[in-house]
Length: 331
Image (cartoon, rainbow, N blue to C red; front, side):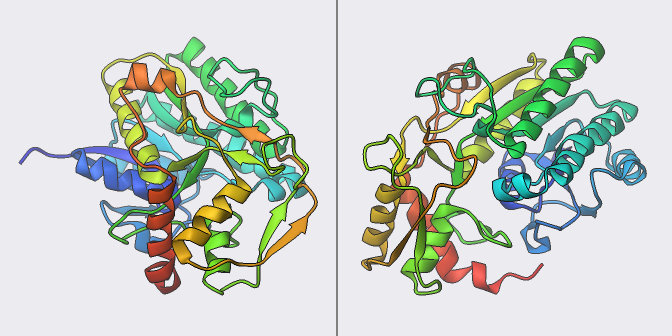
């Protein structure tokens, strides 16, 4: 059996990172998880070794990179909660921007010149047109989106001046879980719509909060493009292979191209649960765009990627995970 090629996965104990580690393993790579476990779960690290450390810890990064000698890095280690970014922008920039600089410089010291970066459609801000392609203006509405855009700009300069190549993956709304129930979505606190709505449908929450009902959309609620986490994971493996094969630095949108309103999402979860659940109307949240839907033509054409799962499968896999797996987790 051939030795597996090691890949450092920063933030690999988190939601999308752990699913990507699964897909890396299935593709013949060895994921080396580097995570401080502040938002990750040791129980999610199942397909390679765990190295506990922070991306702002240069000495720790140097030691881990020297030990494992990865061929490339996939970078998920970031704060992601929009409300927290508005409340504490300094912490967001220190972690998301400062930590990435530390990680990239450690990679360069180790002779690594390839990185796949977990970015977001939040770099686009309010849509000028929908669906949004990679040429859409980038005008983020909150510090979370700005922190990701800053990193994208840093990576552009690293490519231009230091031949450090990267693929930026701008995902829309990650959702769902691994169908066998080994890993899934779990955040503390949980802020994502699907797990919150499932919790309400299961009676684990009193109600589901509907933030804004007066948007210029077909039913007044926000429109989002929900993409299965395993479809995202597949794209990370393809982006890694793109870089390993000598591909140029570039960016790709990852979404289905289909928008779902929050009310439509609630209806789909009610159908899955056979149970209506209470909704609490609330004001719009600061920084929420009315509609975010991907144009994924570039990823389809250049990477050969296409999403395999639809909304019903996303909800079914998430429902199974939250019903059977999530409550049993330990860090």
